[in-house]
Length: 372
Length: 95
Image (tube, rainbow over all chains, first blue to last red; front, side, top):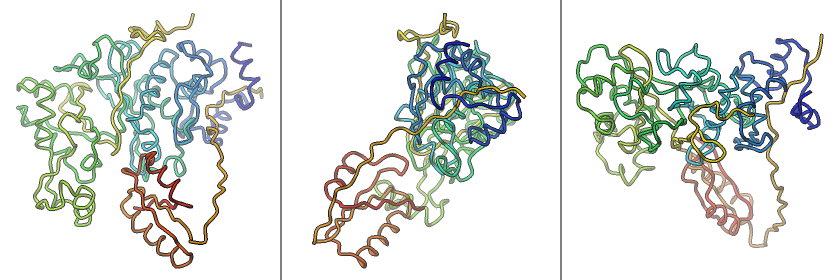
């Protein structure tokens, strides 16, 4: 018996006994509420210990506390969730990194966990470790199939539910939620990006491996097979962004535009920098105030944002986010004439963290974190 | 069938200090605190509650406070004000 197994057996409540049968494990975990509804890998102590083979932290010290329960996310507990999700051990540092980013105050994890809004963490990975562990940045980047994307995002979600108690109807009050709550994890397609990748734009060196977390709705497609110019593609994107039901029209939050590589190439070849893309879309993704219902005009705009709109005419253009640079622009996906717009929650800001060793140096390969 | 152990993937709730109120109401009446969480109709609901309390009880004062956003905690200043100026506080969630 390993030292960890012995330690867990001596810790009240750390282990639970179950029939050695996959269906029995599934039934037990669902009955306990430790679930996203899908089958899981049984989190046996042996599997959890293997998961912790890529962790340089104290195993029983909380990495973060996860609201609304503010449960202590120790590496052992997070590893149990990572096992359940189907993670390989080398994915584990990225799961911890994402949880640390989510715990940054600006993200407002408490609010995003408990809200009625259908938001969930969108994990955007950049840098060499994303490529090393096989995170998909190409075809079907926001869809199914690729294990690293599926399992890392799922592990984070399971930790939010199991450790944080984001349980529908009590800790997670989402009216309808979103399918993205099973997993929403992408890598930026840096090779197809005509501009700086997101982490470099944010000031990190290209060799850093980072995660950027965004409190996202599900993605909304922008189909444009016809436009031959940058302005044409941006016009179609602006039209998709401009919707009256979006939180982003009211709050200073940061929606995401994930250019498909072909759209990005056309826009860049038209002479647009990333900053110019943001400015152009800020200027053009607008809706006249008259498109909102009279009650929304009276309460959302004239009363709550009285300084700007108390006496504004009904044709006043409403921008879809507060400042041009608040739009997060990445390149993701494979061939095809599609891009994705990802609206977000209201009171939240994206958070980015780089993968580092305990001594603070950047991790260039996940193998650096393997326990001796 | 054999048995296996599973590592429990959840976590207990954080220990929270339990405060016992030793407040006593003065003869002047209740000092009522109100925390508007900034949801769309919270102010309407709270006003109804204030009016109802005033009908049933003697109220010395009402201190109105508001969170800037419903999804963020009240500021320390707001909590300090309510602690000093209110005997009890009513908050509201309404949309």
